[in-house]
Length: 112
Length: 163
Image 1 (spheres, rainbow over the protein chains, first blue to last red):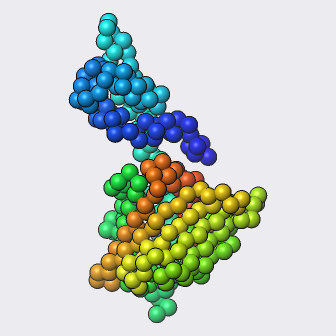
Image 2: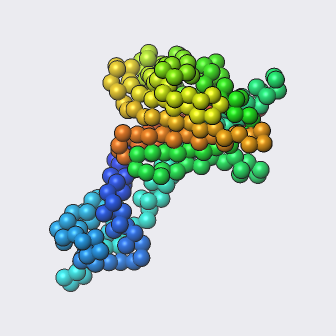
């Protein structure tokens, strides 16, 4: 199973588990931001924001580049797509079970 | 496709819950019987790849027990599921606890599962709410469904090809 126990996906979900990091992702969905722009609406210190950005970087959800004195962050969409696929598999598992249940119910109805 | 109306919806309204809704073209008493009668449960509960359901007991009354066990080539049991029914309103609402453990006895996780049945015009809308102890446990449950999901897809495909 290629996708199971993916350390990369674990990092993605770990990264998404914190509300501050989800807020950072929302901000970045509007385009590139520097670290202080990310920190201020969260009422967060610069080092705290940096720490969250590092977690997002480790999950490859965010890419940071240095331009002069600024650290500019932008969103990387690919790992988010993979996370969507992951929930899709959960859905398929249940749908397969429910389809088996549909067949069983048809059989039960015809026997009544 | 006319199956849109009955399509499975999955939402995560809070960090610790998963809600599944799905409509079935049968009265609620039949859906209930199919979901909580052991010989019928065996028909639709798709085991993880390479596993076989060995024990399937279900006593759907308050304080009644739910007990499932699976074996694999390596272990018997490979996994167990034990639970107790805490609330039962026949054909309407049923709540049970559920603890999954490895064959060694090591507990994997627990979940509170609530099923609500709403019958309308001969069809039944089923809503399952799974409540986990933590967000990590909830996410882990989604991840473990992935293997099974793939296997279930292959099985469906096999059935189609064989037919």
